[in-house]
Every structure is written in structure tokens, then in C-alpha cells.
Image 1 (spheres, rainbow, N blue to C red):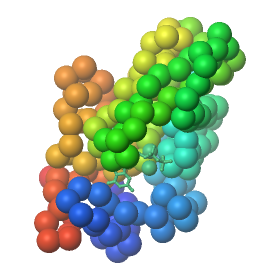
Image 2: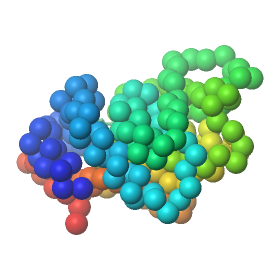
Image 3: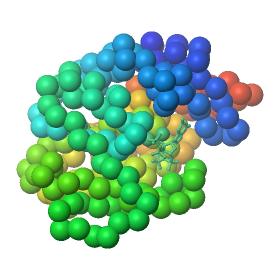
Length: 190
Ligand code: G4P
Ligand code: NA
Ligand code: NA
């Protein structure tokens, strides 16, 4: 998506080997007009699917997810993160390991907000190793909801998340795909 790639070129900063910092439009300060355009693009890309609900994980997935939900005219539910939790009968829980932070978090969605047979679209800001998406897929499975696809704002094709989802036959749409970072510059795929 051209406006997103342009914005990444303009405002993104490459940190180290494999991290793109985009905190002035996505991860800290948020550009609502850009987020709305991203949400509309997700709605267009998944227009052939009936979607009942959009799911994401707090915190950075919320902005793009809420605009996707607005464009699809459905609710958005964000999984909450908890450091440790005592299992509750009232929520679905999954473990999410962060390679970046080398720690496991738990993510949970209250059973009141996800139901058997619902068709859900998963949205997240980054696809790196795919741990967050896998956690949401586990929650959807536990709820017997159907994941109709995954929408990602920025995919890093060189990390293992995309290949893992492709192997599972998941319909993934990423609005920007980064193939590599070279000399502190972003190289987009295709
Ligand atoms: P994964 O979900 O694909 O496995 O990602 P990973 O564990 O590697 O990433 C952990 C956190 O870092 C996630 O945010 C993820 O969105 C974010 N992240 C991964 N790669 C990048 C990157 O290149 N740039 C930026 N800015 N973030 C990246 P989180 O811990 O869930 O935090 P948040 O959603 O509260 O911001
Ligand atoms: Na995230
Ligand atoms: Na993040």
C-alpha cells in the first residue's frame, strides 16, 4: 500500500538488525487518518468474506483494528495482556512468547465477547514471528470461532511468522511487506 510505504520511508527508523520503529504514526503517536485508510484497505481486501468480528491484541493492534472494524461495520475485541493469570472459567487464554522481550505473556478474551460460529478477522500491527497471531488463533479455536483471515500492517518477510501462517493455509494480507533492512534502509518486498 503506497501511502503506508511512503510513510514508513519518511518516518520509520531502523533499529539494529530487525526492528522498525514507527512510533510517530502507529506505536505511540497515532495518525488517525492513516489508520482509517488502513482500515478501509483491510475491509476491501477481505470484502469476499463475511466477517462478524475483528480481533487484535492490545495495545498497538487496537488502532488499525478499530478502523478495520469501522469499515466492516462490526465490533472489535482486543485481547488483554496479563503477566500471569489464574485460569478462569470466564475467559479464553493463550500464551504468547515474545522473542523480542524473551518473556511469555498471557492474552485473554472474555467468553462474553467471542462465540461459537463467529467469523473473525485478526488484525495486528506487526507480523514478525507470528506469536501474537498464533495466540489469537488458539483463542478462536477454543471458542470454536472461525478465523477467516489475518490482516497485518507491517510484515517482516524475513522472520518466520508469514511462512508459518502460509503453511497453515491462512489467508494473510499485509499492507506493507519488508524484505530486509540494508544499511539502515527499508527494502520492501516486490
Ligand atoms: P510476533 O507477535 O510476530 O511473534 O512478534 P514478536 O514476539 O517478535 O514481537 C513482540 C512485540 O514487538 C509485539 O508488540 C510486536 O508487535 C512488536 N514488533 C515485532 N517486530 C517489530 C518491529 O519491527 N517494530 C516494532 N515497532 N514492533 C515490532 P507487543 O509486545 O505486543 O507490544 P504492543 O502491541 O503493546 O506495542
Ligand atoms: Na503488536
Ligand atoms: Na508492538
